[in-house]
Image 1: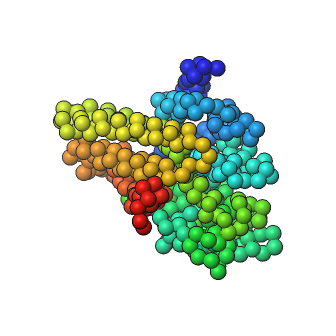
Image 2: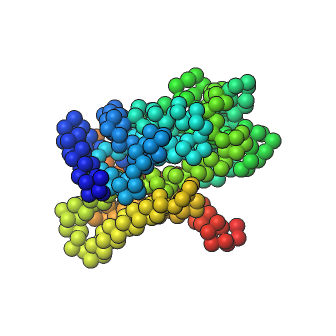
Image 3: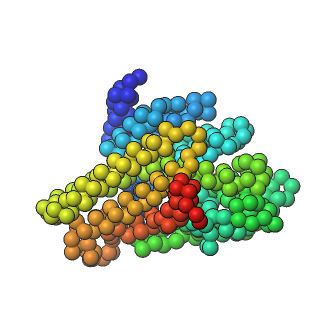
Length: 381
């Protein structure tokens, strides 16, 4: 099948499904809108799985389709154009899935990958903690081995969609005698069990897709550890690299939709008549293309992404923050008020407020600049 034939196939499938059973969730979800239509978007995940649209680039022997890089890009482009709902399976397909492919055992892959590919199992990320956010080496959550299980005690924070997730991949300290990067292990933990409490974090947008997760004697099997005990740092960094590289193509589904909305808003308010704002709109469009090509470059690199992941995270975090600022600027003075009870935020206001968080979660901009300086440029700490 040629690339253009594949594009026609994707476009036809999206038109049939988003124009039919899922017309009610076109444009739903995404950054700042993660609180929307969970049940319907979960049904969309299952529909994607049934049709084979999850794991497009995964090896065929592991249930994927083994499609080319170009065809993966085409799929994301067409999803953006069609207004496909924001993915709930982002963590599952783009983070833990590639991690299992790179580091998991054959038994782990056979047991855990099918639920991701079917769109039926959701994952969340248990990395950041109070006092150990961007500096993950300061993790204090502990996992004590008792026979064939680990008993986990500690707290994670900023855990996206933990209240919906079936599993959490957790970075925990399994050797208390070690410190910093040593003595950490990468554990896969089922969320539906005693000893796990999830508390939503209400943000300035009024939504709460982020959560605090408390582990108080929660358990997971030793067989759910990825990699050797004490070598979790290497696995965790690989997951972050996948998140900041390949996964940004999925993010850009929402980014492109948001940019289109800002452009339409600028037209309706007359902001495009202002040379400065018109230039900023143009620069935002160019910036999104740069994000796309950067993600493609990372995807084309052999093996697990390296410092490119930090470059990608810094690029899209700054771009998205600037888009939020542009949104309220083109809205003009109206961006300062709401229409009245129940005082719902406009899309521009929500985008502006939500994108503050982009420069913090997943590693702050300052930390990403330090990583790039030290590992790529060879500058001193």
